[in-house]
Amino acid sequence: MKYWVGAGGLALILTVAGCGTQDMSTEQEPEEAAVEDETTETVEQPEAEAETEDSTGGDSHDDEVATVDPYDYFLEDGSTARFEGYGNEFAEFTLRTDYMEANHVAIYEDNGGTVGLKVFRLHDDRIELVKQEGEFYEDFEASFEELQALEVISTYLEFPIEQDQEIGDATVVETGASLETPYRNFEDVFVLEQESEGSINRNYFVESFGEVKREFRANPDDPEEFWITSTLASIELAEEKK
Image (cartoon, rainbow, N blue to C red; front, side, top):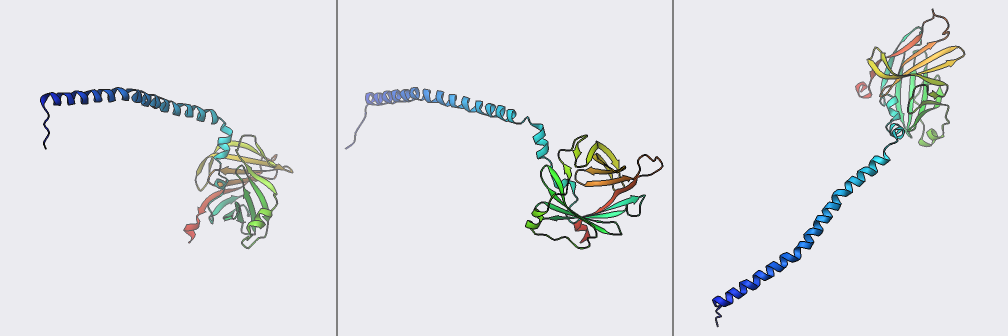
């Protein structure tokens, strides 16, 4: 059986359909307004977060401490540095660097007459000397526990480095200095000076290298006495020695 819809019935159907579409459109308007409100709130949130971040990042001292890497004051593991010397037969020497466990670094200093050992313990804010021995002709070996058990002898460096800062028996007498060496010219060098029984020792340091020069004068009051100096002349990296 077939059903036929006349012109009047078709018009009625279209009219009802049109009314339904208008009602749906009217009901969606509040939802669109709610979406706009949510969008506005989402945009405002990053501004509040940015203000919070700005309010917590004002301690420049803590930022400076956090950026110091104590390993930057030693040469690469296995490398050997040669220092050119003047004024004394033992002023020329080599330094060999050996990284150990538990944030310890061993330095072997060979001046042609003897080999000395120094072991340093590294912290975020300081470097400590924990072992020092002369006439040491073998490689120093120690377990993690043995290294941790070494007692502190003295403070080698303390961060951040500042003018007139006292580190152990030494004082930072200069910062931001320039220094010419046979190896290269350095900037931003700081100088530690130590007086002992009328003599003066000066040690020059630069970040990413560590100690780059030493000076010693037994009698500073004698203008004719020259400094005994040891200055960085070359660096042989571990991979170059293989």
